[in-house]
Amino acid sequence: MKLATFRTAQGASYGAVTAKGIVDLRRHLGNQYSDLRALIADNGFAKAAAHLSGAPDYKEYDITWLPVIPNPDKILCVGLNYQDHVVETGRNNTEQPAIFVRVANSQVGHKQPLIRPRESTKLDYEAEIAIVIGEKGRRIAQKDAWDYICGYSCYNDGSVRDFQRHTVQWTAGKNFAQTGGFGPWMVTADEIPPGTKLTLSCRLNGERLQHSDTDHMIFKIPKIIEYCSTFTTLLPGDVIVTGSPGGVGSRREPPIWMKPSDKVKVEIDKIGILENSIADG
Image 1 (cartoon, rainbow, N blue to C red):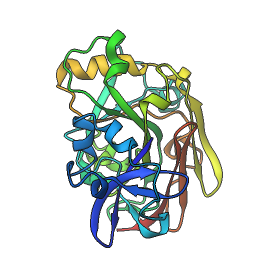
Image 2: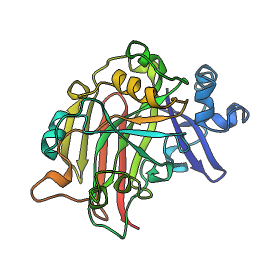
Image 3: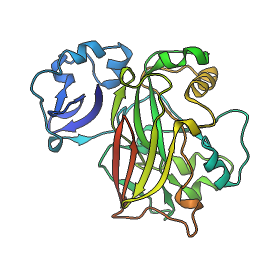
C-alpha cells in the first residue's frame, strides 16, 4: 500500500493512494485512528487494505499533501552516509553513524514549497531514503532490524548551509521551518523486501545532480536502526532519514543553491517522486 497524510476542505486526514484515487481511511475506519501514526501503532494495515477496492474519495487535485508523518515522536537523520558525499565534504569516515535531529515543523509535504528563509540564500538539496518505524523497540539487533520497519518514503533533507556550519553542530541549518520535504507517501514494507537495493536521485529544474543506490551506504539500514535504538527507544511513526549521496549543491564549483521558482525532485525507485518548489519566507 501507499499511505499518505493530506488535507481537504474537511480538514486533515490520511489514506491510501491507489491507481483510481485516494481512499480516506480516517473516514472509512470510523475515526478509529486519529492519524496515520495511530494506525501504524496498532498495526492496522489489514483494516486499511479492506477498504481499497471501492471507489476513491478524492482525486489528487482535491487534496493538499502533508508530510507522511506530520507528528512523529522523533526524526533522526544520518549524516555523511555515502562515501562520495564524505569525500566531497573533505571529512573522514566515522566509526559510528553521525546522527542529528530534525523537528516536525521543518518538514513539508509533496508539491508544497520549501521555504528559503530570509536569513540565508544558501538552501541546499539532499535526496534521501526515509524509513518509518512500525514497532516499539530498544537495543534492536541488526538481524531483527527489518522487522521494525513499516514503510519507506522519499525525503529532501533541505539544509541552510551557512547556519549548518556556524558550529560543529548541524542543528540550526537543518531545522528552519518548512525546509525539508517528506512524501508523497509511505510504501509499506511488505512491498519492498528486506535488503532490496533502492536507487535514489535528485533533479533540480530537470538536471540530475545526485544519483546513487543503497549499496553505497556506509552504514546500512540494520546498522542505523541498531545504533539509534541503543540510545533511544524507537516508537511507531518515528522517522529515520538515512543519508544523502554526493553531488550536493554546496560542494559544486560554483555552488548551486535552490532559489525561488526552482523545482526540485527526489526520486526513489519502488517508492515514487517527491516534488517541491522553492519560495522565499
